[in-house]
Image (cartoon, rainbow, N blue to C red):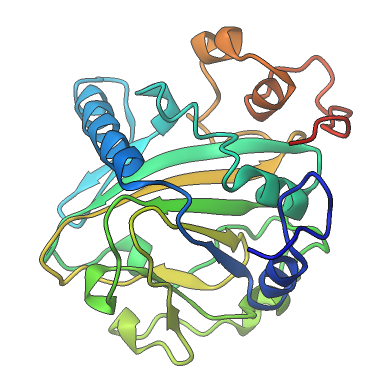
Length: 265
């Protein structure tokens, strides 16, 4: 990794330029093999707790299981909210008024076709056809298995599409893999993928030999409401410690003014 341009934030000039140009960024080797193994175990626990919860949100289809909100089902995932391997970068991209909007665990079995997440889409259209100068949302995706080939079901993106009007984005072709100009984001377990809320993207159908398992952390701004059902529980709010964790979990009496200006790494 190049030397950070912005002291204390962890982002380099190359990373900043890449994200601004392409709308996404890959950070390699954020997690060790042992850490990934522990996260897989925590993911299994969270999935079973979610399945046993009669009030659960998310969805459960043959082509995709969405465990939401992930941070409510195992505290191991609360610890990832401000992970030093990627949070300083996301903070630089969004600014000091950062907060969490939603969290999820996506489980995509092999060979079950595709559904909504394989439709080409953007995650954020809050400002209309043209996006704001500062991203309103940036998502961190953490694959728990290798996504080494397009058959493994990686996310594919249209680089630079966050810079244009969403009205210019073409519709999903009959087979989402046939989208012109797509770039599959190929990753190893332990890498992290950060993408702009307005980049045109889709999850490729998983036709490989193993289940695709990916964690998602969607960051926005402190003045934005979490997605419905993702409001942090009282348990998480009470247990939140430190300025960063409190702000991320919307623990504030003055959400329009909270900033992490004096918090460095």
